[in-house]
Image (cartoon, rainbow, N blue to C red; front, side, top):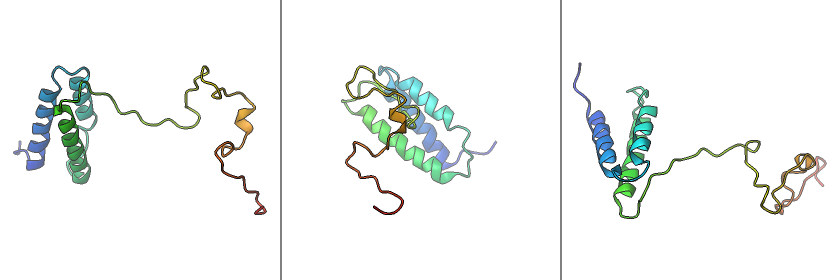
Length: 118
């Protein structure tokens, strides 16, 4: 087996530092492990992506080490317009079948433009 490259050593070092910094913070160690497992299958040749993730991990390490971090949350991908949850208790957030047919720009101050330009 060949010796690990400099970048590989940096990534492994970052992993250990993140685990140490996350001790005692709810969800931090599990999140670190999950993130690294998720990206473990990246090809070694994708250096730009690896370096990007390394820099992102460094920033997260700085945040974890700061005295303000008490836990580590997860990043959630924004949902599409059909997947958005609706809070039925909030006024004006109720959707029914008639709302689906309305113009999406309605209520935002944007004017609807007809196909003939008027």
